Image (cartoon, rainbow over all chains, first blue to last red; front, side, top):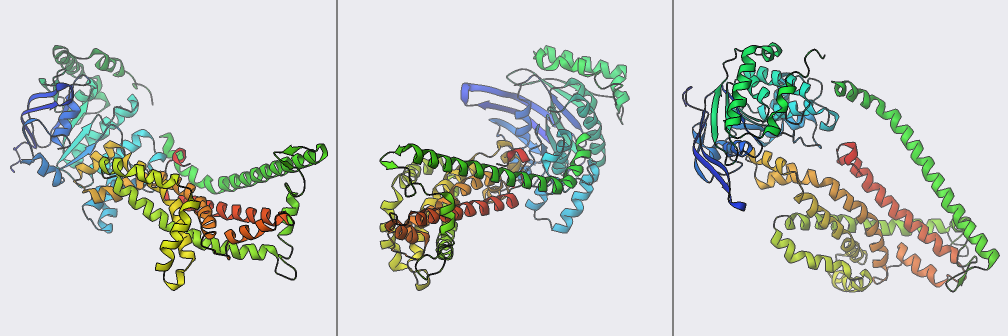
Length: 276
Length: 299
């Protein structure tokens, strides 16, 4: 696979669910290039989570072609080509933080020594040194989500799939984790596909924002985010950031957005400023 | 990061906190014991003073002996020039405990295996669950003689007689374990399953890495019901097996002399209850060691 070849390539992907003849996705064409961070944004029920699951071969498309790392999606899943992070951390209560992170490595048959070494690296990466021996319920929601990210990165997958990973967190924690995710993304060199319903989050994180329309889910527009890297708290105050937020919001409106879900982001933009 | 600071602090507090909790639990236990004891004696005193009748039975030392007499008889000879009653009952309890423990382990393993098999398909569940439920609607007293007749002739020398009793105890043990194993294995968080699927984990690994650990709280809830039940099963199983050495034998024996020595039967029941409680406590201890869950998820 050459460097320029897309990590994810979707051609004419359609998904219909039997029950109620629901068309969740219609004729989706999308390429995600290596090292990109692409956000999927849209009103609730637009099929963005379904699209993420189609890429991960957790949901089978009704028609169309899904290629990940130059392979069919199923083969890519079986080869461990991607790591996934859900909205809930989905940590195993009976395992310590360290053992949660090393679960995929255990399944891959890594030796104990290698696992321990890798877990230490990952704990440092997500800034949870010293918490390896804790159990998940002893951590805050944000810390749990960082454990879940470390677990997804444990086997260094080329692709990271994230399904509203910070959706359940408060705004301040979310902004901090946004910045942390960018740092991790740069350090790990992964390609990330990120589902969100927060416009500000999508603009802040992404190289490109894929705007999806209401059911049946189609790609309404793709907005290039040309904010310079590295991005930090100041980025959120630049005029160009607001222009891009407006651009994404306009595309969402054209696609028939759900006002209820996206409107609060405007207010959320200001929360946390000047607060320690 | 308020949680980050409080988590290590919590673990250092734990040992003194635990001692305090243990002292509190002991105090509570003694207080409730005192209340029950007082209620028993008060009922007896009022009943005797007023000539109160419970059904056909008048309240007197035969129908409702003093609790201190029940405890006191334990430290008297079981028969003229014989060993103390408590020694006799201790030996009987150990014998019954052996039968019950083997039965409990057999029943728990069988119950778990059955639950794990049924968890695989709704068809199996619909087909077999009615019979599994039916097995428990038949009184154990009706099943026990048949088990003795079937099992006993096939047992090796070391297990002769009491082995059949263990099978009867297992019969009472397996049912709650099967039902709860089935429930626990099938109520796994669907996203946890998606996660395992993303790792391309096969169903065997999903079973041992995810389903079984997730089901442990359910399984232990069943084991806590099953542990005392296995003691009951062993005691009842001794009757048709004509085993004299256990608590069942002792109960049968003292039952015959109830009119002349009622406190002996009461004392035997007390020991049987203590045996059941100690089985429960062993399971509780095992649960504490094995099940790691958020405090609010531990029963």
